[in-house]
Length: 358
Length: 272
Image 1 (cartoon, rainbow over the protein chains, first blue to last red):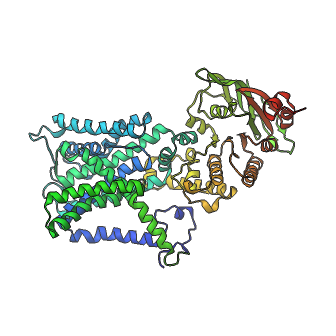
Image 2 (cartoon, each protein chain N blue to C red):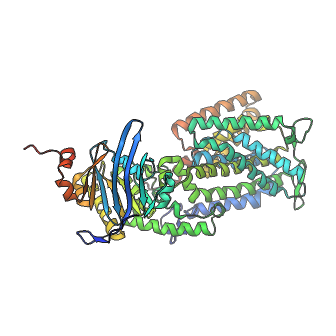
């Protein structure tokens, strides 16, 4: 009865274009933000941070990035892992080369470096589409990981071939390194996730977002209207890679602390993020969060239920997880290609009419 | 170089201005097939210019040449008194040409409003950072352009489907939204590729009314391809008739109707 559009009139085009046009949506969104920023940091322990919240936020950023490219601009990419590696190695090189600069600047710079690399690998998209483009980005994935393993300069000639995040502080709080508290990790990732989700929303509802969607839906018509396909596709690759690069930088510097390219940023990572986008919903910011939450929480959930409660062996639970994710991907592709976001929207539309649907 | 005849008035008093676009000796070949053979005609400001002809006559190819989709092997296109160099379609769009398609080419995943807003892309120049934080120029442009788009929505009477995804709309409305998208660009010349194809009588009447109103109220120059002879003869000021890639007639509807070559090629030879 409360969840209504009726009576919620908009008197300006500015109001009409806002992200949450329904008042209740808007309030619950602000409430969720307030809880995330003001309540959670005081109660978070390292299990919740490391197993659930921090990976959720980081993968949500990566999923938004891939969603901009694949969901909004229609360019399939299997290079997400490789671009995350670029972000991670960029932030590592920056952190070790310029220890005096604040870590947040480094993370943003790492994003910009990834954007440039992403544009470079996006160039083939002007000539090829669909599966062929996917294969071209797959080449980026393998080439980048190979590059970071092969050239010792990238890992500062360390004997193990790994990169390890040194400790960096922000306002006296450790943000990276082994001494980082759970709440500092969580808050760092939360700030980036909220800010980037806001930026992604703004971009996709504005001019550049329309250009991307026009290219996705019908590239010939888009060009006739005046969309330059070169700039539209490359800007999608750049913005997407910026997001993915920041996710990679956070994954390495804040979450993992140490990483090795082929292990942390292998092809599995590309597919994981792609599955998040497919399950969550192509072309939806909310869907990116939903997909990331789903695929981060599923293993935690299965482990708690199957291993801890039912006493199954760990490997059996891990295999079951693979089967469930595989089945879900097929299910979503056939039944609901727009993913969890679409299911959520349908629920909301039904709820608006409830309890009098006629 | 270009001849600019004095302003003329059409029979119903509308002002017909000087030549806006002049196509000179256009020849377009696909391999050995000659799609357009040495065709010249002009489009004058404020007029409704029709291109007619049997199937395969090269009408759509002609429109594609005008909108920059095909580059003719020979011939020149003069626009606003200047020779147009070979251009990409999006550059042609920036000159002020907008078009609709024979098979509707809308963006199915976007709402009606977003589709029409896309038509105004070339008027929205806010830098990326401004769009990213939705502040300053980006927000201002969004509201200003929305106002213009709402005028078009009112004009075409599609207020009630504003936020509907285009994919869900019936055929006739899709055609109308496509016209709205082309109009949103405020084009110097509006190119319509069979705007009435596949419509029922009522929808055709609506579309005719919109085309006439557009030309009448806003002075929009329109070039259209159409199969419905009744519609063409009623709407247009001047008609180009094509057959097998050649131009076989050019003039007012009455002149064209009286042209024996046109009659035999297209309207049919009488049985007497």
